[in-house]
Image (cartoon, rainbow, N blue to C red):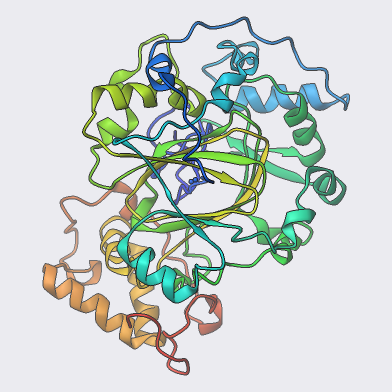
Length: 456
């Protein structure tokens, strides 16, 4: 489930390549995700989990798609060959999941081990209530109807998207060297409507602001008022890693289980379709959540396979592990706290937007992760804290003192942290010193001219 070394992952996207992407999100899923949760209490199915735990028989693969556009077949073939060099293009549907509606329709059976993700109606979820009862307690939650008022609810339907962006290219994967694979919107939507793949191509666009036409997507939605802070915006624009993804996930696509990088938390809003989420508490061992040891050699572990047979095997093998599951429907927003393992399966063709952030609820964790794993970026971030947010700068220095941590500029030449990742010395130092070079959104309470935020 590794997307690319795109700093975040919120969304990771695909296959069993080298473990390059920090958040380990597969194309079956890249931040953040993604990637995350109705009254599912009534969704019960006796013996569903036990039956699913057994290795399923593979029905015959579906017939090749008949696309509406003449060039779609060639474009899909090109992108598939670049995305999965370990598969022939004819093998993308070899497990026959397109012929198995039971996987996407399988109900969630709640019990002492499988728990529902907290669901909160939008009317109850005021910013203050949400911070006190959810974010500050590091608990996942689904806000029902949280984005139902957005313009995106009708401007992001597939017909309108095709009219708006039909000739524009969007990212649908990465090759083995990390180079982006792009496809025109009209070909991708044609593919989505006709695909029979086990784990379809997934449109994950990070560079929304780089194209004037694509940038209009930003006018269709707003950052929910439940997430007013984003202190990573104190980083200069060219230093901050990707943190926002706009995505179209065909049914059966998804993200395999991962933790978002650097302790960041994420929100994910669905405007069309339904996503099925699974989450594990931060203390859950990686080997348990990812279930690599429970997979047989002949099996794959893309999102659809994970929900089909790996998740039931986890529950059977580790009955003491709590598993949180839920459905996120159109108009819902899910909150995934930092440190939580999570994965998602698109049970319908989906459109969503997701962002990762740092705020009062997770600054300590994020700062400790950034200073260790992204030393150069940490230096730039701390510099801007000192210039523009003195209270946050003091807080970061206090954390360093308590831990006895020395920043890069405080250590002798050539001295490295014993547990730092190799990427911490590979980040670019090119960043402007100008105050106008960072985004002031999400810095409420940090700038001297504004009122204090929750905890600073």
